[in-house]
Amino acid sequence: MPELPEVETIRTQLESILPFAIEKFTASQGLKKNILHTKLNLTGRTLTAAHRKGKMLDFILDDKSHLLSHLGMTGTWLITKTKPEGKHAHLILEGSGFFLTYDDPRRFGHLYQLDELSAQKKLNELGPDLASADFTFDFMVAALKKLKTRALKVALLDQKYFAGSGNYIANEICAHARIRPTRLCGKVKAAEYPLIFEAIQLVIKGAISSGGTTFQGGYRDTSGEKGLGVNNLVVFYQKTCRLCGVTPVKKIIQAQRGSYYCPQCQK
Ligand SMILES: [Zn+2]
Image (cartoon, rainbow, N blue to C red; front, side, top):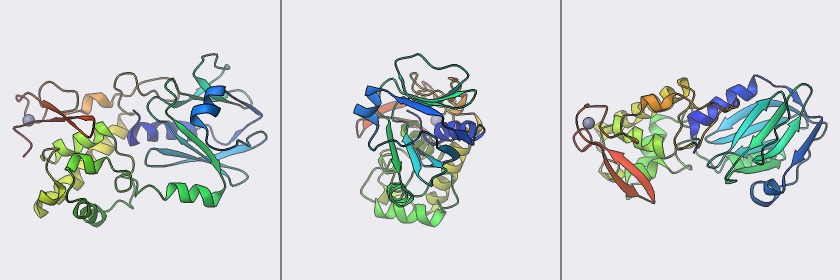
């Protein structure tokens, strides 16, 4: 599933081709049935900017409307010179010289075209973006105090507080902070808050600079490439902890998702 670093990689690549004037577009039945939540008014419009909050891509159009795109499990935007033929190409935007396509085999993505006010409302459902200056140390501490009865890793998945996180990011943050994923937020010591905050910066920036991380074929960038971020992982999907280099990683299930930790390094 694409998390913040993967969506940011896609966003940067999309931004490099903007502005993109849409001459015509085609939407599949699958898009209308599973992915699209509003009407689309794209013919003759121009995509002028590509922003992001958490895992939500936010395209701005020249009529000030927003095209919000959540990639779900397997969604991506592809940039190609020829028209894509695959059955997973659910929305094809045709411009001069190339095509911009929303491709999503499992169709868990979401797409909305909204006016400025409604788009802001939708984006405000998300907390501060983990990679932005809005996500401050004080905000993080307040969030952990508010979520004190929740396990740290489960809390880290909450998009209302940690927008852009996902399963691998939450696991890796716990590992770098040397805290077990099962520890309740209320049991995190004040001296450990800076460790969590630094771990968030390390994991997010490391993964963005490697172009995203791929598991089980869930993520591709705009050219269909998988990122190199998998090389940075210290516990997620690892047999041996890469912090200490010796201890076997333990896997447990929390909130229906796999949690990985090192019983030696994480307390
Ligand atoms: Zn270890």
